[in-house]
Length: 413
Image (cartoon, rainbow, N blue to C red; front, side, top):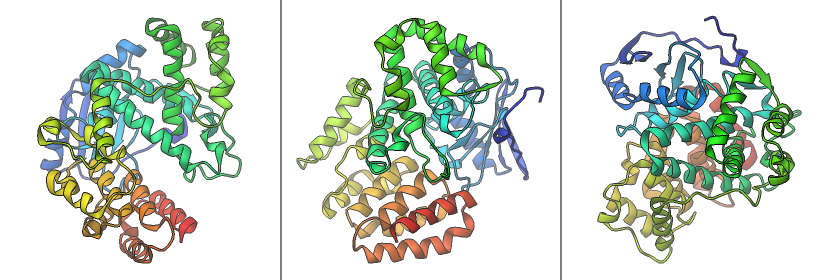
């Protein structure tokens, strides 16, 4: 490589790898297992179109190749944006091309994160807020506005839940925060992603999309192959959008706690319909077959995330009997459903919980399942189950994932 990179982006993979060509700049690699390679090639067939949309929005793709590597299930992240070869969890292969949204996120990092990098982890939102914004723009261009809004809606729900999680530690609800003496893995959250996205979306709404697109192109051209901090970004913003600080409270957005009052829940017919169906569940009405006939994973994910945290045992069973959510091939759906089952103490699904915790090592799924098992008073059986499963599965987890589960246990056991 001729391009300079920060050290956290240095990675290499060793194994008996096979590959499939999926575009002029893209191969998909994985262990040389035909079924995995074929499924990955199908899921990521639209990658070149995404790169082209990214270039339209943000300027030339500066890294020549954009290859993808599907790792074994123990890989602890959804994706890691290593330049020229993105590392991916196998859980993004869902069979309906929706896993491509994770690829859109890692691709977007080719501009925001890899070209312009946060100076340190206290300014992590500069990497992730920008990339989440860029991801949704790419998804909108390739998969349509409804998909992008569903993605935003799931993020909005996640952001609100993080406010609850950090209610006793508001420092980590700030975009720019103080991490002196803090393990970044312990406070890793959706805040830099989703609050960062909301901040940029707020600026876009203020100045209009065409002007914001020009601003982003200029921002990338100005700072590429450099590391910057929040102050540098704000100075550049004020210089290029005169008077913006009179329209938007920039200090509140970057240094304030919580969600600013001018953040915005997304709106679309599909989004509103799913949320209202989730609200009707509280009145005892389950969606009819015809209402969910064309739902994919994201629709179900949004639906499940908007249900009450705890429901009747019989309701959990009825939901699964009708829609087989516990057997979903989409882990976002499956884990959201299993979390609901644990919180509702519906033990019929604990076998599936154990199986899931033993077959994937992605922290996005380990965190909520282990947390649901050990959080709260009583629940001795759940806590015993969590400890047993962890003792049996821990050797298969990545050390970072192991540390995260141990910190959940330290807090709740």
